Length: 419
Ligand code: EPZ
Image 1: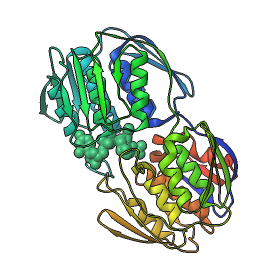
Image 2: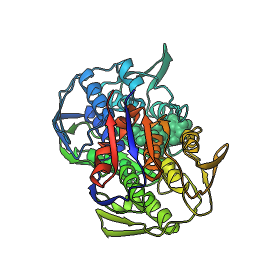
Image 3: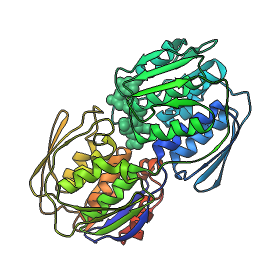
């Protein structure tokens, strides 16, 4: 199994650039199914999940290729296949983002039900309810969702929960629906704003994306365009915590500081010095330790669930007791048990994690269970006494563009041992 070793207690310092956002690149790639012509995407992170989505687009009949590590060119003809391959959807549940675009473009979509994953069952009922309200027939059989509609007709849709994926899938489908679509109780994550901006660039007529209510006027076609993917706020937050947990002085560039507000505010509340040097640059300087803080994970603009594990790693060395409430996913504390093996003092009780700060943690052999848990274990290894070996790098490579290399550039002693 692939692994990396970290020699801890090395103060990180220097400047590092964040990559483009995985969770913007994936729906944006799926949205190219709606378009006709050539699309160029820049600031695309070089990730396994992006490679999987590119394989998906090729399987559907589009041409797609990396032009250099961070830019992708896609050519879409008129015809798109309507069956998404099982092996790709099970490899990455975000592949389900192709359902709305295929349905809107061809009138028929056959997409495997995406599996759950370690952090939760990850249902798609809100996606399907939206498609049905737009006029699609929905049939689930043999593990496939079959969606069919002669044409999609705009309507008012209220999401039972501000689901990021459902907001994106339904927004994409609504772009080519006849008439106007109003989506209420939408997710407001910055990645949704980026997707809506990309669609508008290609000729869609969307307003309100990034707020709780999105209004779409259907159009008949979308053309290929060039677009730069928004910075990855979760990778940026992870790099900021790497600076804080090692008592370091780290500047992260190529960010969007507004997207980092909940993380910046929480780190400042803990007593960590965070400076916003400009809209695209933040600096973390923590030389005097920090205190416990409490937070609930919430839909944006609340504290992001994708930063919960990384923040927990930081708080295991805080002064005092922190309380985390995970409100988004039902099983997103698996990193806690591995952190406890390093000496963290954590008590779990259903949605709550109680973290009693300790003075030190010790390096250990630990295993990654999911993407953000992996980041948390690496962050803890950076601060631990002695050496930490982290197994299961495949999870990390799905969602972080060269994180070990970025940390090494800040002075971390990390050695990777590929499979
Ligand atoms: C997106 O997943 C992100 N993934 C996740 O990031 C992120 O954690 C999540 O949004 C929340 O911010 C991508 O964008 C590729 P949801 P998504 O639909 O769309 C329930 C990472 O680490 N729900 O907002 O799947 C669901 O069970 C990943 O980068 C339904 O009940 O998240 C969950 O409890 C992990 N029915 C909650 O909503 C539905 O139809 C939030 O899910 C859809 C969702």
